[in-house]
Image (cartoon, rainbow, N blue to C red; front, side, top):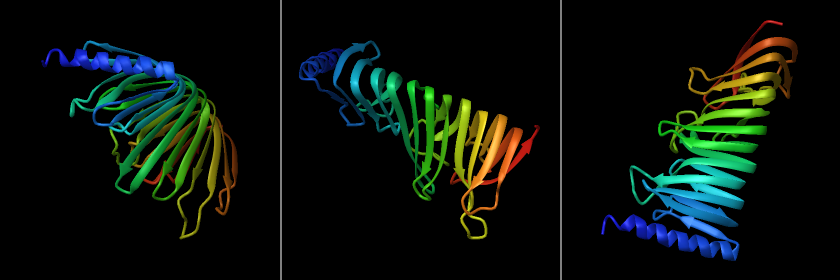
Length: 262
């Protein structure tokens, strides 16, 4: 019975998939409700392992609650596998998406929740067990929001490579690091100064590296960097810098910066 069970489960899901295609609506949920897949149409195959292989199209939404990961797009090929911790749960192992891609990572930190949203025209996600790898091509937008303080980092560029936490907890959020290239622009809020609201920093460059694991966290901009302070803070405008490093606090607010080169 143990040997036959995966085969029977695979047949059952395949029948549901076939019916869903005919109805124009497809939905898959694992036994624990930890992985939910929705699309207008789908093809499903169970391979050895087991590995559940989905080919999805039309308003695709993949919700992996174990990893705190949600992926939406118009076309997705998806590999999912049973969780090692609980065989009733499944997790995304690999996903390739095309058309209006959005990757949302939600985690709990010691200071509350944090949500990271990344968008692009094409992208892929790989669960590497110790972390998750996200690749996006563009244009791309990345928003890092701390729900405790409502502060956010917004970055745009042509391509993005991000490393995210593997599960639903993290010290400073779900984003460990990110690299954006190609006419990069960032908007980041300054930490309060003397009890007063600080500036919003708007900066541009050719490349951005966000390191959320360093102490303190940093954002490094390089290549024709321009910086402008907006709002009630005192920082003004700086042009023609080759490299700028912003230091952040655990809420993602900038606390200081240094520059070099012209």
